[in-house]
Length: 244
Image (tube, rainbow, N blue to C red; front, side, top):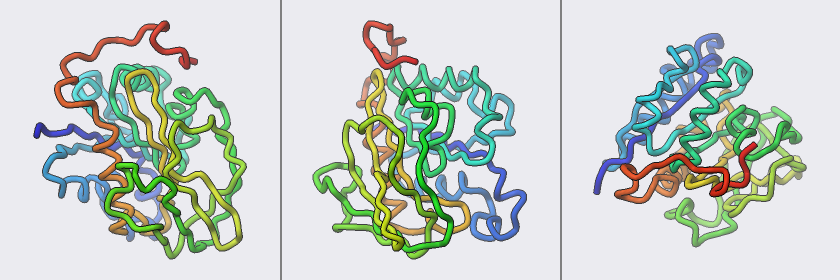
């Protein structure tokens, strides 16, 4: 099988300015994710960060990316609108996009979903989270049991101001009693988008094997069908009615 070309994008701010977070992700969250994805022999992985020229998302990089992973939190406003538009168009043309944790407030997530808030409840008390698998037939949850338990995570709670997902894969429960739609799938143009909630920077969530399995599965799910990479064409307004 041909390689799936993956780009892992990260702000790379917390890890450079907070010693506690740097101790968890010494090479950055992007590299931690890239390291476990590279264990899958079908994935060819590179990384990009906010402070790279063009945020590391040049035309050549985007053109050769099958699936883009996006982690952002404190610097959403620093992302160039021009780059956001290029990423949006690549998703409409067929590139997969996986948005992680606080990426729900990123420009690209909001542009693709047509929301300008993504508002939710949150509490950062390091609570236990249980992610219940509610669609066991979905390829993103392949190899998992009924749920994933994370010992400590930031709480996100409903109401989550997003459009209804095309497919809902996970619902989270937290010790405080809140629930949250934590695994949401969308189709935009020819591309697939997966939002996956866990991944607060202060906890070693991306070192947990079950979380790594979900993200690896999601990359395979979001990748364009084999043979389609050479047939990308720009999606017209008639083909895609959700453009904002």
